Amino acid sequence: MVFCAAAAYAQGTQDCTVRIIVSGPAGGTPDLIARLGAEKLRAGLNRSVVVENRAGGRAAVSSIQAVRAAPPDGCTLLA
Image 1: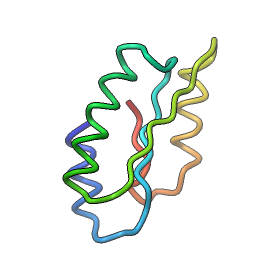
Image 2 (image 1 turned 90 degrees about the horizontal axis):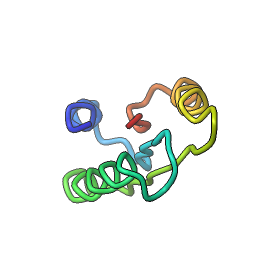
Image 3 (image 1 turned 135 degrees about the vertical axis):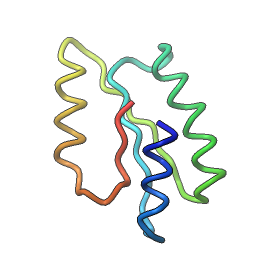
């Protein structure tokens, strides 16, 4: 996740909210890791960072679809 954040930072000074999409429920291990990473990104990029959880039976599919549907601006990450 840190490498993706470095690539997003290198693209320029965009004014966007960084979204981290997690395929799983809130409170799980992937969610906790994403939230810890989000805190580091907030401090390093000086931008808002939002963690979105996709829970349910088809969470992995819906997470990938959400990232694919996002504009290619470097502001949406998949954890």
